[in-house]
Length: 177
Length: 100
Image 1: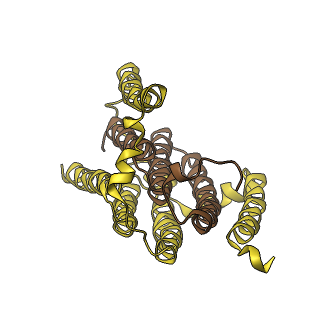
Image 2 (image 1 turned 90 degrees about the vertical axis):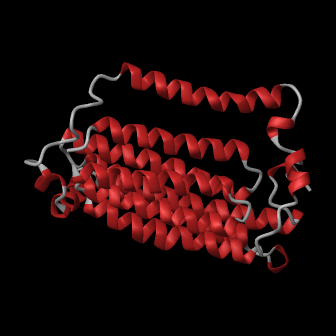
């Protein structure tokens, strides 16, 4: 079972790094740990015969989005968290409704566990060796993207343009306006 | 091959970590990072289901999710910068007024 070992290795890396992202006080370490988590996920995509997604994960997420985060963390000079003030304003310490609203997040886990209980196909293998070639073909992926999903693809360009204009407008200094 | 359930449980665990981060952390940047964790958890289940179904649509929607995530990160971080300029804080509880 070598592939199961590889799966557990990547899964442990992804879960561990993600948990540490939440646990860090320093946002700089959080961003770097999240890059490690994305690397592990990209390994899982390779195992799922999705090489295009794996490469896009590294280039877009680890290469572009996380660098953007790093730039902002450094630009804001990674402010020291005032632990006492931040603990005082923590939602779980607020009185009444705020605390119970936060505890609703725990309900999500119960809900997910119930959903898994209802599913019957959990132990069926995810695909067969035979169709690995068709699923992992970047050629077919590009064909599908530019024929069946052309409209969504073109709509994406509008979205990115709007996001770019919005980001420039929001981050601009007001005194230059 | 690895059972489908393994991927779904991993995806659920990652999503729960992300949701916990949004609820528990008091730092706008960490909250945005938690949202990225949740998006990636959903991406993993899309690819796993797509592989189980034997077609490419799972991977194509991941492509679009990544694009939306990039746009969201750009606008979100611009908002964080604009907010930090006004209040010199990243604590979401510092931004309670609608106007300043």
